[in-house]
Image (cartoon, rainbow, N blue to C red; front, side):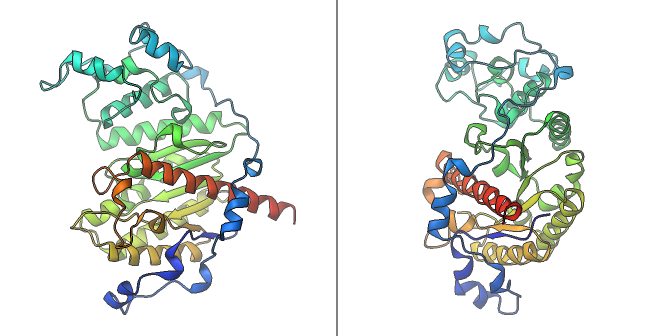
Length: 362
């Protein structure tokens, strides 16, 4: 694992005094663990020439399927849905099931022709990713509308075990087809799962290992799915579902520690980046408690040789709540929220690439 590098974009060095007042006996991360990324450094790392050169052709897994490899956005809207007819339907039986009673076929077709045509539900996203996998493609590198006729009418909710199996298959496919491409992994819950593939920073292949509703304990239990992969960076975002389920803060912190240790042992060449839990606007969850947990996460990232990325400061308003303009429901992110996160990840990837080069060429 690379030398510990804490990416603090904001308030980690200026945590609100209300946290310490509310929890005076709780330990705090040492101040020296915080490495501030000053403005001029971010401006430097935003330059595109700092990003590493990679093979831009995605890995292909020719033995896994025979669907048409790439779908043109223009052709899709000129001829939908006939563009996709004749493709294999063997992996998407539930997509052909009847529509729910409260939704008519004409309504769904009208929706399918809108410019924002992309999966809008868990069943749709699952079927699109399954179709991409069967086609021998990397889901995160296909256009967002790809394989529309295979997922547009999907409504049957996949189980947690089905999602785990799909993500493991994706990881193993990437492991076989990665080649010399850099690989970045998103580990998390629905917030990571719904990261739009066209918003992911350019450069590496991205492997999205988020599952809706997952907890830090669940993520810890499925790290074996990454066996055989060669990630350069692994981003972790977890904990909000733990809090929603009433899991104790000590267990949340310890689960994160165990995740970092496992990844450090199994992927020593990867830069593991622990991201702070995002604030919410949910009355049943205390943002003060989230800030305190984030302090502990910063500390264990330092102790375990990982990096820490402070998203909380980016997404919170003056009151410490999730900014209204960045969320759909007070918890999940909207397009603006993902755009902000995209910019943060792009800067982080650039900074890490520069840091890696400086270590190789002092």
